[in-house]
Image (cartoon, rainbow, N blue to C red; front, side, top):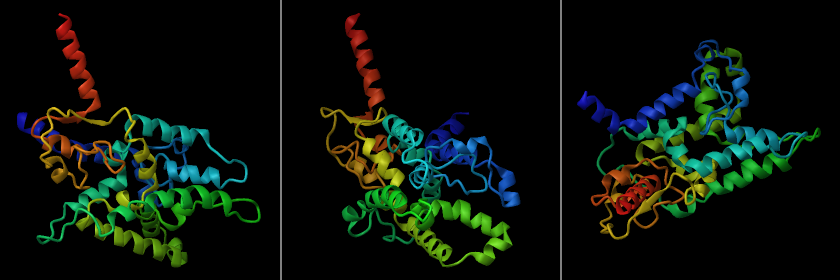
Length: 300
């Protein structure tokens, strides 16, 4: 029992990721029949990237839902989707990316594939500039293009989903093409482009940790803005911190947590917390519990 508990604690994040991906993509009949689920649950967003067109998806992606509303000729803003993003952002920040996003799980598993020594990299050349791409994609492909580029009927289209989203290609496009010969016959240059982009990101994920999350994901860009103020955030006790850098060494995103514990890039995987030798780095919730306990003890 003790060994099982230790194993679960060590692999807790992966277990949560797998369970959440299975829960939100659990429409098995969709994969078997090559048809997407169209029930009432599809009107509900899930926190991470979760393509509406995935045969197993029981909910909708907030980025896809936001584009659908912005591109609609009848609506210009969806308070539900905006409120959803604010709610999860304010509560969890990029914890969603680290624990609840199915495409994040795919990248995590690929990064476990061993490579010859020196082939693994923490970041790409030009990392600082590349990290800004996801904000450009958020503004351009998610917000502006669906709103401004419309057809003769006044209807826009979901540009990010159509031209970039690798999660939609992997979890929606590929399964549907495998089970629908007529779709394969009409798949053209656009799908070829998205398949090539997906393949490049999957291959890159073996060597570089989460390249899509780091450089391209607009949902991560939104949640990252909330990291410094989210209810679930990290804190450093300066009097305990010896600035040894072990938190940064343990971080696959190369974040110096002792300097910026609430970086917009942090996905809250928790590796830095486990690596800290003095217990200086912890969640804000734990700090508040400790302060409350100390206050009660001093009061007695």
